[in-house]
Structure formats: C-alpha cells, structure tokens
Image 1 (cartoon, rainbow, N blue to C red):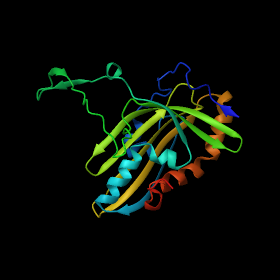
Image 2 (cartoon, rainbow, N blue to C red):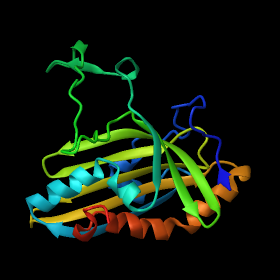
Image 3 (spheres, rainbow, N blue to C red):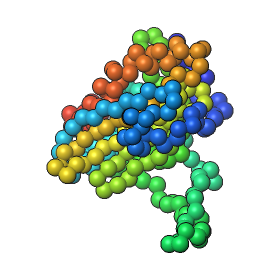
Amino acid sequence: MVTGPMRSGEPRDSSLNYAAIGATQTDEILQYPPKGYRAFQASRKIGSGQERFDSAARLLMTWGVLRGSGVEVLDITPETAEDVYAGVDFDADGRPIGITSIPEEELFAPDGTPYVAAGTTAVTVYSGGPFKVRVPIKVVYVIDEPKRVGYGYGSRVGAPAEFERLMVVELTDDGSVVFTIRAISRVTSWYRRVGFALLRLGQKRYTDKYLTALHPTRSAGS
C-alpha cells in the first residue's frame, strides 16, 4: 500500500506546506518550537579528523543519509535559475545597491553525483511492512562552512505532516566529527493520520539509521 498523492510524471507542487521555514537553523527551536509542533534533536560522534569530516560531508550532501537508511529518494529536481530569489545587496549605510549574485557553479561529488542544493525538490519513500509512505520534500537551505556542512529540508504540499529537518556534520575544535539531526513536525489534518502514524512509529528506527548512515563502516554504501 502506498499513501500520498505524488506519482512520477504527475504535476508537481513545489510549495512548502508549513510557515516556519528555516526554523531548524537555530537550536532555540528546541525550547521554543512553533505552536503545535514537536521539536527534536539527536547527535552522534562519527569519527575524527579533517578527512573523516570531508568524506562524511560529501556523503551527506549527495543524499547518502537518506538512501543509506533505506529511504528512496525519487524525482530529484533542482530549482531553475528563474525560480530562485536572489535577494538584494546593501552598502555599509543600508542602502540597496543591486541584486545579489547567484553562484552558477554546481557542486559535484568525485563520482559525478550533484550535491544537494537549496530549492531542490524530491519525493522520499518510507517503507514499513506492506506500506509505503511518499513524502514530497524541498531543500530550504544549505550550510556550507569550513567546519560545518549540511542542509535543511521541509515538507511540501501533499505530505502527511508538516515538518522541517536539519542534517549537519560538524568538525569540532577537538577534532571530533559530529552528525546532528534537528527537526520540528506536526500532523496536518485528521485524514492524514494513518500516513503520519506510520512515520511516527518508525521515527526512532529511522533516526537510528540516519545517525549511523555516516559511520565509517557505512561510507562505502553498505
């Protein structure tokens, strides 16, 4: 049984189905989640050193955590240039001076796999026994810092819940490589509770899978 309206080849709606866009960027969301939402965070050390950080970041940014956890990632569609809001640059006095430039270079892993980018849409498929739940998502922001790499993605119209999830790898000052997941979620409406219940029942299972997906023994895709 497959729940959810999205099918390959059907018209897609890239709109997010929640208002708290970008909320997972700050850890304050754990204490003060939006009304009606549940907040969650879990972290795990997955090694140490620059090389470990680089390999973990590369795997994370090519959908490795989801796919390594048994989640299918389908219909991946990068956002087109004309759909991207560039924003406005300001001078030191706060006066607008022009449109922010958008990087044209797309990042790729050594095997040619494109990196996750803001605005990318996809459909994730979770399996539980005879059931499959299709969850349309959109990448809402990307973190690309020397010692911190990751992305946040949120639920799109048609998902059985409203949620946003951050997955980030960090190289700490003591050389540890730490993988963190932070999320907020809430059910959208009563008739979606079946699909949402399946996701909630598997939340701990998938969280454990997520947290181990970047472990060195899994880096080869095992």
